[in-house]
Figure 1 (tube, helix red, strand yellow):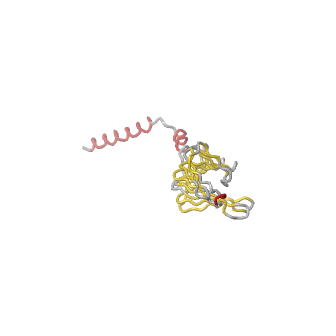
Figure 2 (cartoon, helix red, strand yellow):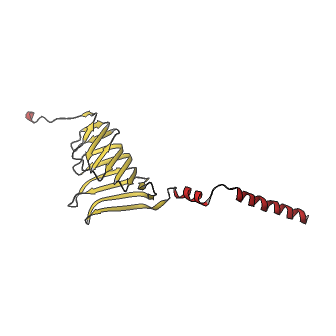
Figure 3 (spheres, rainbow, N blue to C red):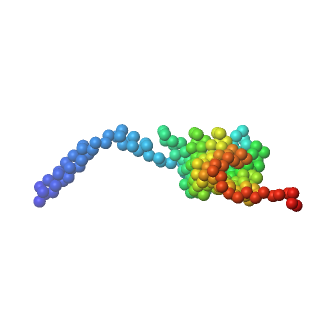
Length: 189
């Protein structure tokens, strides 16, 4: 009986050694696979970011949940549960704000991708609604190639299938426009 147990132990040990020696993955292969994973560099909940230029606050971003990813191919911040960005003029007044249910900030390009119920409001009351919007901070542009609905400060509604604007929403270019525009005839008053 003792010999049978020794034989079984020997078979188990030999099988284990054979399995280890038969592995084809080298340590370098395992390291290269694991280094490509998108492990967060940092993360947080209920966070606020302040972006400054020469000690002046330019933007503040608020997020329910935040992760930062840094790999050889990508460097971005992701706001999977959405958030809000408020931009400021040089004098510190609010220039506008954008809210979305999802946002991604490509750090090196200074490009924001905003998705799902995106609402941008300018300081003078113009509102842009869309499902996808990009904000290129380097160029000072916001744009989308998807359906967009714009409500101006007077309540007029315009719709289109894409738009481009400066990031202050002063010069909006809407393509394939539909909507109702009401003109006030002052000569009848």
